[in-house]
Structures are given as structure tokens and as C-alpha cells.
Image (cartoon, rainbow, N blue to C red; front, side, top):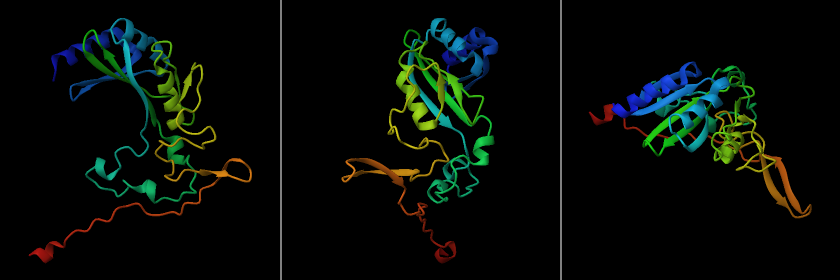
Length: 224
């Protein structure tokens, strides 16, 4: 483990104190979780006192069914491709999704050019039904479009954002496409109607199909 990362962990813990939930080092990288109510104050300290002047990236994360995909567990529960086979008419907000604590997170990737160090910061919104965190635009102005992207794709709201609207999907888009319970086909489809002279939205016409790949294995007894 790099000594510089251990020293950074100590500096971060001393500077943030009880504003921090945890600080963990893995693969020579430091990840810090902040309390939502103290996130802006803590991130301002990280910028001004610890020298992390650059926000490299801000993204959302959905931990619904985390660790249950076939490529993430040795138990192989055959749920890794479930998004391709479930009922498309199923409500996006299932009971599991609504009740799951700490489902969403906002992740900030920070860089200190002066010290040549990187820091990952996580903030978990307190509510799953309406995930809200404070906008960090007052701390790093470059967060503007990053926060719009997280809102568009995950439905995470950023309190204090000056112009929080969709940035990648159409304004009439229904739902948030990177949520784990969002159907692969979406909820509506759009096309240009020549008679009406405009784009129209219609229910999805794509037929349900199974996307689970077939794996052919030779019978071990046949090789004997």
C-alpha cells in the first residue's frame, strides 16, 4: 500500500472529522463517504485545505441488485441478464427498489494537481424515493453538466442547481435509463409523423425477447 495514500487518509480524517462516515483504502485508492448534510462543507475543506482543486468527474450509482449478477459472485444466481427477460410492463419502482436503503450514491472523483493525488468521495442521498443531494457547483463550477447527466440517467436531484434538466435524453423521455430496474426497451418510442408534421410518442412496440446467451458445454462423461 502506498505511503502517500495512507498519509492522505490521515490528513482527510483530521480535516473532516465527524463530517465523514468512513474512509477506506483499496487498490491504493482512497474512498471517503460523507454525511449528506455536511457534504458541501466537507468538499469545500477538501478543495481549500487539502488542495483538490479539480473535479475530474461526478457520476451516479444505482446499487439495486448489487453483487447478484453472474459476473460479480461465485454463486451464479442466473440473474446477470435479468433485465433482458423480465416483463416489460412491470412497474419501474418495485417494492424492493422503493424500500432499499442506500440504493443511490453520487461519486466525486477529485484530483490535486499540486500534490499529484486522487480522491474518491461518495455521498448517499437519505431518500430512495426522491434522492436529493446538494449541488457542488459553488465548489466546482464544472459540476454543472455532470449533475445534469446524473439527474437525467439516475433521477438524482441536486438542490441548488441553476438549470437542472435533461442533457442526454429527449425532454419527453420517460424514466431514467441507467437505473437497474429500467427496462431495456424503455417505456415509449418516438417517430416522425409526416401527417402531423412532428415527432410523436407511442407505446413500445418491440417484442419481448430473451437476451440470455446460450452456453454449450461438452458433457464430461463423453470425454472419458
